[in-house]
Image (cartoon, rainbow, N blue to C red; front, side):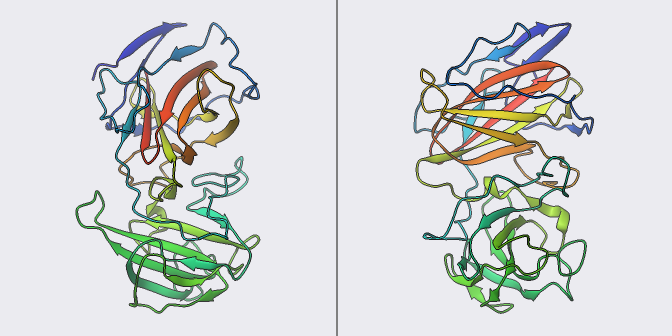
Length: 327
C-alpha cells in the first residue's frame, strides 16, 4: 500500500498512511529520552524533525479514511457505553494510570481505567444488559489471583449489528453490590457503590471492557468505547516500522483550541503492548487519548533518535485515527 507522503531523513524514508492493516508486534523499546516541556507557542523544530500537516478542515462530518491521501481520519466511533459514574461524582477517567499503563514500568499493565470517587458513590450500568456475575472474586477468578477485584459486578451486553456483538463490562473494588446474577439491568441503573475492596489503592471504581468475561487478557481500551462528554472526541494512535511491526513510543500530546494560538494543555501518553492488553480490539491501536475537547493536537515522539511531529484534529463525537508508518 503506497503511503501518502515519503520523506527521506538520515537514510530513512518515512511514510505516513491511515488504514487498518496486518502487522506484527515489535517489543523493542525506543531509546530513553526526555521531550522538552510544552511552551506557550510552537517553537521551530530541529532539522531532524519530520513535520506532516493535515489538510483537513474543521467540519462536523466524519471523514472516511483514504490511505493514499489522508494524514489521519475521523471515523464513526464505537461509543457503546455511558459513563458508570454520574455527577456530582467524578465521571472523568483518571489519567495517572490509564489503560495499558505501567506507571513507568513500576506496575503491571493496567487492564482498565479508574474513576476516583469516595466510598458510597453510586456505580451505574454503562449499558442495558444482564448480570453475568455479582459478588466477590475470592472463589471465582477474573484476574491472575484471588481477591484482586474484591466485590465486583460483570454485565453482559448484546450489541447486534456492531463490530463486536457481545461485550462485557466489569466494575470492581465495590463497597456494595446491589444486583444479582442473571438480573436484567438498564443503562444508568445503580448496580453498586464505589469502595476499596480487593487490591484497591484508595477509594475508586475500576472499570473494564472485555470480550470474554473470564479472560483477563481480553480487555479493550474503555476510552474508545465510553461516550465522551459533549463537545469532546477521542484520539487513537498506531505506529509501525518499515517491516510492518508495531513500535511502542512514548507520545507527548499538546492541545491547541486553534493552531494559531498557544497550547493550553499537554498529556504524556504511553503506548501499550498488545501482547498483554487490547489483544482483539478492532482499532488495533497502541495508544489512545479519550474524551478531549474538539480542536487541534500536536503529537510528538522520538524513535531511534529522531523526533517526529504530527498534527491531527479531534472533532466532537468522533474518533480521530492517526496511523504512522515508518519506511
